[in-house]
Every structure is written in C-alpha cells, then in structure tokens.
Length: 149
Image 1 (cartoon, rainbow, N blue to C red):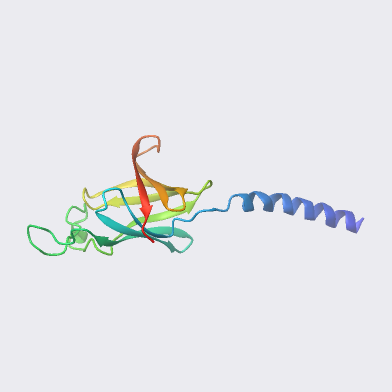
Image 2 (image 1 turned 90 degrees about the vertical axis):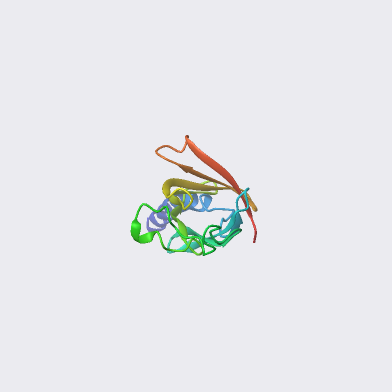
C-alpha cells in the first residue's frame, strides 16, 4: 500500500512538473540589440526575476542645438528632464510568458516622453519583435530589433 501511494504521488508531481518544463524559453533576449533605424543600441538584462533594458549607445549622443549630451527633456516629471538618455533604463518588468515571449513590461520613449505597455517576442536567435501599446496588444506599434551581440 505504501508503494502504491508513493507511486501515485510521484505521478501527480511529475504531471505538474512537465508543463513548467515545456514553458521554458528556448531563445533569450538577453544581450545588446538595435532597431531598424539604428539610432541607438539597447541592452536587455536580468533585473531580479524580470528583464529590463537600458540605452547603451546613441548614434547622435549630443543635442545639435546645444552640443551637450541628450537628456530626457520631454519627461512628464520635471525632476527627470535633466537625466542623460545614455544609460537610461527605459524598459522594465518583463516576465516570461510562453512561446519565447516576455510580457507585462513597460517601455519609455524618451523622444516623446510617453510610456507604453510592451512585450518582447523572440522570432529567432538574432531577431525579436518589440511591441508597445496602450490598452490591448492588438493595437500598437511593432519594431523588429536585431541582435548586435
């Protein structure tokens, strides 16, 4: 009887463990990326149990009008308008969903000062779709990012 209960418990536990193993990502967005415009490069990295992203290079790092480093001058929070764009964390809180997709994140656009809901979905080892949206993900703007390294 003890062996039967042990076998039944083992089968139940393995049934619950299998979906978790099937959910593991096969491709990772961790690394350095650029968008199709190649205005900047972005590093996606682990931050706690989520993924975040920061700006690591800017093609035109200085403001042409002042010749000083570009800042977050359009941020809705006046206290943040003087922070530099270079090194800025602009993507936060991405959690793995399924199918090589990280969801429930936020992406901040320093060129508009707006923040959007966002997901990242790996299309291949060196390409991913990044989609920012308001409300539902069916409506929004997608970009294809290419891995730099």
